[in-house]
Length: 69
Image 1: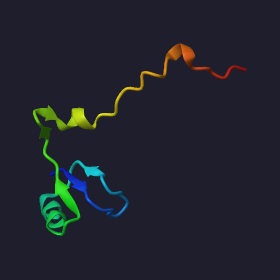
Image 2 (image 1 turned 90 degrees about the horizontal axis):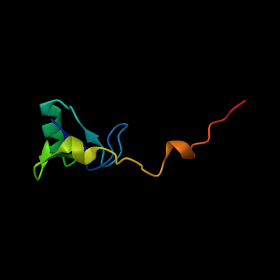
Image 3 (image 1 turned 180 degrees about the vertical axis):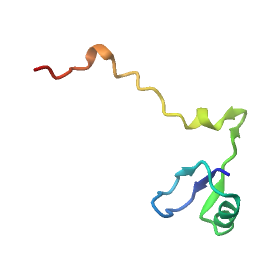
Image 4 (image 1 turned 60 degrees about the vertical axis):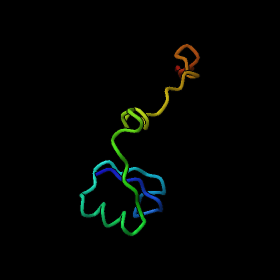
């Protein structure tokens, strides 16, 4: 079960999404108000596509300066 933390828990900060958590533990955290369930789709868009980091198009290969000896 996927859950999003509503407050810091263990080593994880607020807002962190835990992709695989045992159902019993997830339901307990949801009941206590520590986490909320995250669905696998949002308005027809898969969650993986939503959470994927955007590509930084400002970094161009020709602009990178490599250290040479």
